[in-house]
Image (tube, rainbow, N blue to C red; front, side, top):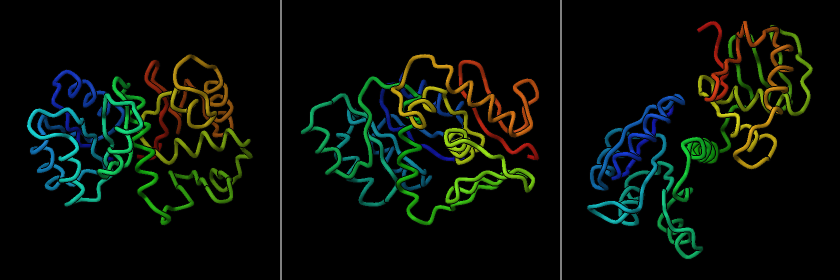
Length: 227
């Protein structure tokens, strides 16, 4: 389970994000001050930090430098500044990515996954195994029980995106943005249609799911049916 540390002084925002990320399968810790956040980053060693710049005790820029001096953990900065000078300063201080306020929990989750992919380096496995399903990223082939599924390009992209995040509920808007390169927002039947085709090739259905599970209004996840 991916662990996330939220450093955010606004209680409403902090609780809302923590709840939303936990619902998506993250292990979430949070603090309301910068110094406590630095201490938590050292003691709990999270996989990623989400840092608000407007903190009550120490400026977010300084907190970012403190974290970077003791840890290489990916840091996503949450800022209200959308000017180029401010963004450049954030990166120069050691940030790995940033989100402009206000932002949705879905958008933040996508940013988290993006920085984790980048920080994983070149040693990422090119083969994903979940029960009797094998997704070969290099060959772009999926095999179930020793039988090739014969997926189309987009079907493979959809399956591999979900398989790389087992157990995580992925919003359909994110799938549209990451796989079809369509902007966030707006309903689109494209994902539903491809999920239906993918399920058919996996030998399952929406009423009797095995690998692919959906939750109305939340998203889609791929699970290990043997777990």
